[in-house]
Length: 158
Image 1: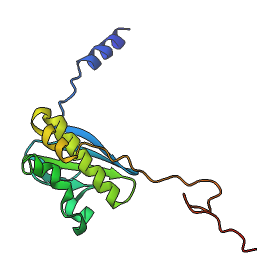
Image 2 (image 1 turned 120 degrees about the vertical axis):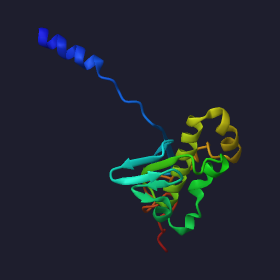
Image 3 (image 1 turned 90 degrees about the vertical axis):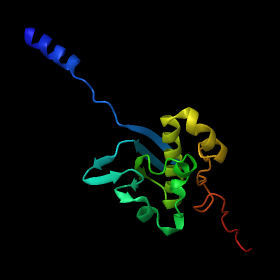
Image 4 (image 1 turned 180 degrees about the vertical axis):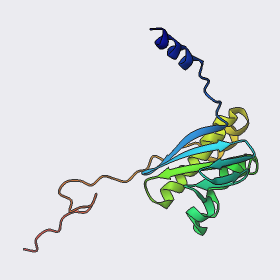
């Protein structure tokens, strides 16, 4: 009995370390982006060093992950709030295609900035529409439609 009481006391005294990041989730179509916004200088995540001003998506730089066609859309929330070199951003994104993942990442970054400082960042992000989730999703396929959502089966010729 005494040993159990000591174990319970030891468990209660364990302190949880304070997080040094702000967490937010962004969604678009079938994609889900989990965003962490770090305000510290250098962050080491599974062997990758992330400095302020860098955005890492699935252990790659955002420019490499989304390609040249994205034209730095993922930096827009940071650019609007003038915080491009104040935060290190890491993103884990799953599901969907590159376009949906890009939209989810942008929403996640905007939500994380909103959590960081509501009074300062929210008005500019809201004005540009970065805090609005795009509700459009893929239409489900219907029975009897030949495999697509709106396609009809071909009728017989005679």
